[in-house]
Length: 186
Image (cartoon, rainbow, N blue to C red; front, side, top):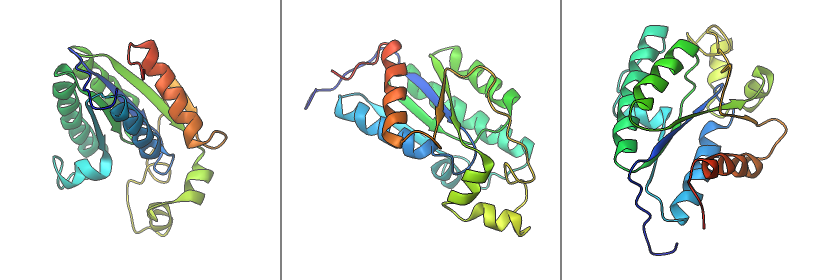
């Protein structure tokens, strides 16, 4: 829909969760690009941006992560209720916190949880920000997958395997899920 804008009465929130370095933001960015090309209003919120802006100074303990993600959930809810498709890319390692997020957003907008699956070994091998190396040297505390747990979703709306599928394949799978929820690209 080149040049035109598709206005949704109500948007939705797609929450990408997985280990650091699993490919969440890569996939979310590709999905955002395709949706924008189709004329949708899209916001991509990822952990790096959020910690530099609305959650400045947020730490990595369980309670600090919960507070940080609570803020993000409310921002995503506000955007979605105003017709924006919101793509959230956060480690969000705890099931109970993801349930809280689903509850906050789900009151006003559809919430889709996508598990970006990647083994800890592969995530350590990728280590795009050097965080795993620092954690393994003891320079970083509360590193998910090293000294803090990651609790995989029990019933995600979609699981993407970033070790065996390409980013393009995972973007396509995500777009297929969105199509099932009324978001079309043509």
